[in-house]
Image (cartoon, one colour):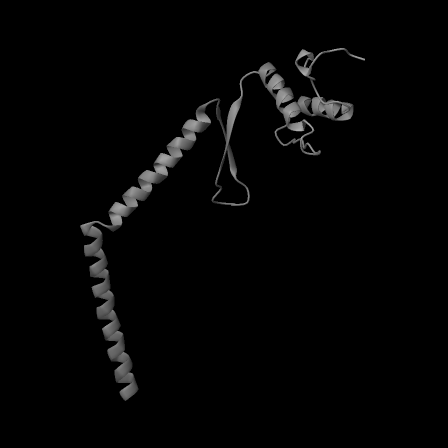
Length: 147
């Protein structure tokens, strides 16, 4: 039995106690170099699985070379399958901010376009043309009904 005065004298536990198969599975899973491969951790809350996974992944990431930022974007041809864009590390956040700025700019420009004098003139011209056409059709229907 270990002798100590309080828990501050004990070294923190590395890994997960009594989970040799889980540790082995995690090590094997990290060796699989396939973007379609996923790992799933299950267990009761508070057992340390997230802490363990993060520490193992941080150690693994430190040994790996450069990483990419993976961005999932909307696929207009098939909305159930987002497109994946691989960017150099750190560019994902910049890309996100640029897209947000683009959307904001487009919304502002659309708003300005619909509030412009040219739009109002064009809209009123179309309404007038359709009113003339509508009146002509109503006259034809009235004439037909009278006959």
